[in-house]
Amino acid sequence: MTLTGLGVAIGLGGAAVASRALVTMLFGVSRLDLGAHLGVVGMLLAVAAGACWVPAWRASRVDPAVTLRAE
Image (cartoon, rainbow, N blue to C red; front, top):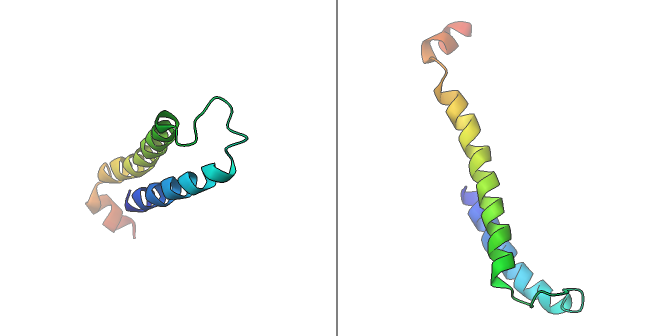
């Protein structure tokens, strides 16, 4: 999640700069539309949280003794 947070921070900065160049292609959306940016950030954070949580949850279900015997 740390890398996701860093990516969100860099991406929001890049989006603010890039939107100045893309202002002619943004139909119906202002240059710094807060709702659009928050929607994308929220979706990215939700997917990243799921991608972190599912493997951790599965790993917590494994019995350490069984894992050590398997090796």
